[in-house]
Image (cartoon, rainbow, N blue to C red):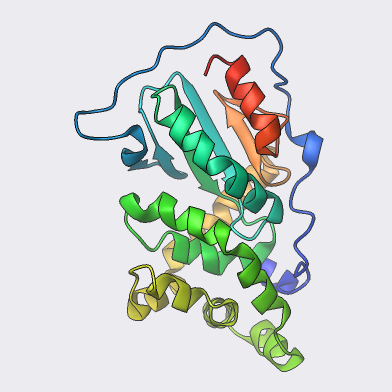
Length: 245
């Protein structure tokens, strides 16, 4: 796995986004407002979650505004977007039936992003977005613990086989205890960290979307197939409104 060679190089994790390079959609002429749609009886649209080829999508399957985020669970810019924007995005826009939200994993920092990605997908669809939000809420703790790894631990991680390295990084970041507290047994967490099919899946998705230019930094936000020039909630919300949300 080539990205293991860069295992500990990006520990500061401060440059995960290209900023303004990401987008082409800047609002332009505001679109006509789109109609809200009621969710199924007894549900909210935020309760409606489905697995997709590249991730998970929340909301009205027929929402006229389809928002996609390529993100890294250890990217500080992604974390800031989630902490500021997740609540209003889901409660105001997704729950109206106007907007759906799909999250797609992108290992912008290489191997160090793999443990939270594997554990974040070590759950059913109903828990996917709550666990994602909680990982972002606790992101700084994971980063601080990884930064505090001793030189000896760093050397052990660098010299380990990939699956063993993922397990050691997860332990160092406190991720295994974190997911255990949220209903994922330790044995299952260990199985997920060693799931070669998932490891290959996220490695390929990152390589493919980087190679074809879809993602140059995280978060990359795409609305109805068009990249947005936005990496913060303050930038994203006006674009949703301009699109009719």
